[in-house]
Amino acid sequence: MAERLNDELPEELARALAAADQRAAASAQRVDPAAVAAAVSAALRRPAVTARPASEVGWWLRVAAAAALVVAGSIAVRAALQSGAPVEAAAQPSALPLHSAAVLDSVADSAGAWVMASLEAVPVSVVDSAVSGSALLLEDLSEVELRALLQAMESTEESQ
Amino acid sequence: MAAPATPVVTDGELLTRYLGGDERSAAELVARHTVALARYLAVQGAPDEDLDDLVQESFIRAFRGAHGYRSEASFRTWLLTIGSNLLKDRRRQAARRNVIRLVPEVADPAVDPAGEAEAAILADRLQAGLGRLAPLQREVFLLRAHEGAGYGEVAAALGISEGAARVHYHHAVKRLKQWLSD
Image (tube, chains in turn purple, red):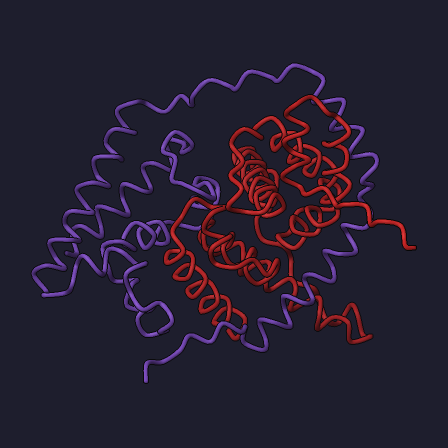
C-alpha cells in the first residue's frame, strides 16, 4: 500500500503556528474595520496613481536571465532523460501520485521543480524580495537579484 | 409564523455590485475581512504599527484589481494573497533602504519568567522559519495550514496547479519542522 501523506502538521509546528496565530489575533484586534472602510472608500474615490515605470535594470540582463532559465531547464530535462527517469511525469507534479511523501520528495529532483530549487539556492533575502506569490516576474528583480539568480543557475548547470 | 431569513449576499456578489458602482458593497467586504486580513499579515510578522496601512492598501489593490478576480478561489483567499504580496513588496523596499529586519528577534526566556516565553519563542521561531521559506512555499503553507484552504483553492488563488500546491506544502512543512527542531 502506498505511503499516504500525513496532511496534519507535526506537533511542534502546530503549537508554533497556534502561538503565532494567538499573537497575530491580538494585533489584528487593534485594527478598526470602520476606519479601514472609510480610508479605503476615500482612496477609491481618488484616481489611481499611475504605476511607476519599469526598473532601471538593463533589458539585456532580463533577456539573459530568461535565456538561462530556458537553457537550464533543457539541461535538467536532458539529464533526467539520460538517467532514465520518467521526465514527463517528473516535470508534471500533477501527474504523480501526490498522496505519497516519497513521491513528493522525489519531485524536488525533477525538471519541473528545478527552478524552485534554484531559487531556494539563492539567499532567501534575495528571493523573498524578488519573487511574487503567483509568478516569477523578472521585471521585479533588481540588478543584484538577477545576477544572484544567474549565478545560482550557472553553478547548478556546471554540476550537471 | 417566522419571518423569512435575510438572504446572505456572497462576497462575489458584493464585488460585482461594487464594480457596478455600489460603494456600500466595498465597505461591507472590508467589514467582513479586515480582521482576518490583519491577522494573516501579523502571523507573517507584519509590525503592528504597519498593519492599518497594509490592510488598507491591500483592500485598495483588491478593489482596483477586482476585474482580475477569479471565482475559483474565495474572495478572502484572493485578498490574503494580495496582502502577502504587498507585505513582500514593502519588505523589499525597506531592505533596499536597509531599514527593516526580515527576521524577528527571538524572545529571551529570562525576561519573561511566567512561562509564556515558550509560546513567544515558538512563534518567533516559526516567523523566522517562514521568512526563510521561498515565497510561494510560504504562501501555500499559510493558506493551507493557517487558513484551512483546500489545495484547489490555494492553487486557484496563486495561479498554480493543485499538484504544485501539494509539493510546495509538503516541502514547507518539512523545512519548518526541521528548523523548529534545530
